[in-house]
Image (cartoon, rainbow, N blue to C red):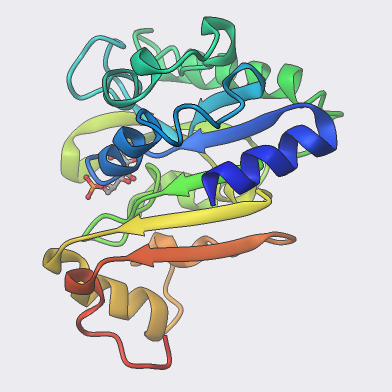
Length: 229
Ligand code: 6PG
């Protein structure tokens, strides 16, 4: 799917833009992409990497989503350094980091005022609390519909995050949730089959406006789903 999306993007416009998710689940996909046959077939020179969210830590911190992707994929494939657009999460002021990332998106996607970037592919994960990117339950960023990137204070983690807003995520051509583990099963059922309650289950906000949504979930995470899903 990654390869197909990459080829489609390059064939159509000479570039493929992908927003990566963080956490641990994507490590498996990143490792696959770093090895043959994928390593030898992805158009790395035309592939542009972005992040859906980032922790408020330096890029060499083990908690950093950039760091995880660099270790698992980017350091192992011939992607030009200029194609990797990380969030400047080392900045003391997350507001400044968010503004800078917005500028990066506006420049790369040649956005006019009010326009949203359209990623060819956006990977997302889902926390067992129903968050996605750094859109956590009950947090301020859930209500943001104008900005592209915002800082978000997450009380339960007692930390700032930097995150794409859900209108940006919903403007992607393809959104892929990667969900694994039994600890996600109950929340996944609520997100997919329960009442629409995005303050409680922010992952429910993700509905691409003119794109596709694909949930790739393992058996453990899917064990409570009925065949409706
Ligand atoms: C992050 C991620 C976050 C992640 C979920 C799931 O910064 O942590 O972007 O949204 O996708 O927390 O994480 P796991 O894959 O580790 O369960």
